[in-house]
Image 1 (cartoon, rainbow, N blue to C red):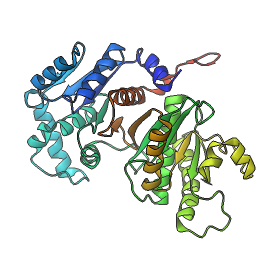
Image 2 (image 1 turned 120 degrees about the vertical axis):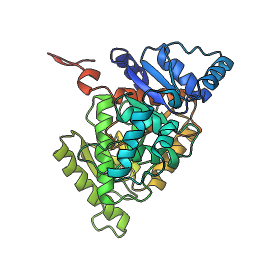
Image 3 (image 1 turned 60 degrees about the horizontal axis):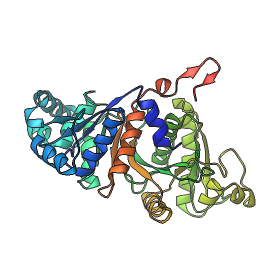
Length: 351
């Protein structure tokens, strides 16, 4: 059973509210319909009601059990404007503009819904440049306690169960930080591992990737950075109480393939068994994830943002309705406390 199918089954017992600021986009409407049909929660479409209804009619999609919100007619507009004004006055972000005009913007309105618990998770990016949508999220969303870095994670799901966590690979960072420092890489590793564990109920095995494996005397500063990040990540995981195995620096084949790991004399709990891959920079992560998607033709979900106190995703403008639905399932499951997502029995974890 796929990760999306497993999480969908559990979400039916713990439905969540997912807000989409680009509510009139056809793919969003189709994904919302599927989310509602499977009884996973309430999709919330932000935008012009008439336009959303016309698009849905053209697609022959019913809007039953789907909520539509027009910011200019919402009772929350005033309070959202006040909260945005407060962020401008006392926050640490560079939020600028008239607070009411900002609140009327569907992206800011949707972010404020999640930030104030009016919705459980957010998915944006279907029609906007990634930098624009991400900026809105970073300006309004609270950070995860103990973490300074917001990054992104892509989830790939292969039919080859021998890779990753039963075929599921968590890749980071693939969309936010171009040249992460060792400290930022450590944050990325820990937050990605925490979410991987939350979604799969397994102990994440994290590989800090580089072009070399356990180099005794690395010549390149990039390799030294990964080595330093590995130690920092182990320490931070212990401090935050996040259970995971972390090793690095490590080549991708040694991380994924037990035979390659053995041939290269790489041992340990992560070698050949990694389910979480942490890339040294954005170039490597983004290129690798897109090559895997298009060459191997495997499902990909995300980008899922990590390091935030609320679940959010910034999807690609090229995402399909299927991709958006899968991403919605993931952020919705992220919003469910792990104790309820994977309840335990007296004789051990529930299946």
